[in-house]
Length: 102
Image 1 (spheres, helix red, strand yellow):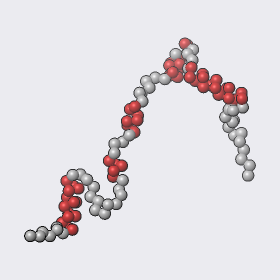
Image 2 (cartoon, one colour):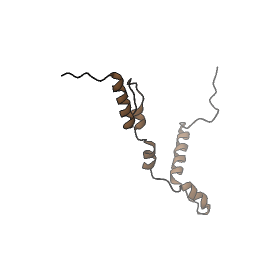
Image 3 (tube, rainbow, N blue to C red):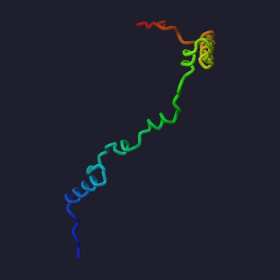
Image 4 (cartoon, rainbow, N blue to C red):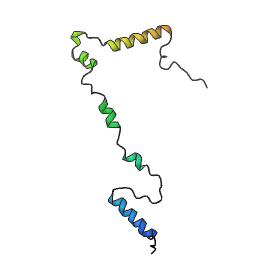
């Protein structure tokens, strides 16, 4: 007793129904759709939640209480490094100092 395979139209209709039932994309020609990438979880919120939120900065504190004459050590160190580099001739050029010759 031999059974004949089902017709292609029936198999296509069955796969379309299966895709709809299991919430998959019906893609009979196997064209690349990028659906695998789109289904992945977004990494943006994970990255932003990794770093703690900065409640207040040193700059805000010094602006709120100028009578205390507070000094931002990191900013002072950065400005000192820039001054050292300029002294050695390694600083950034002045704005507009580079002229393009045609």
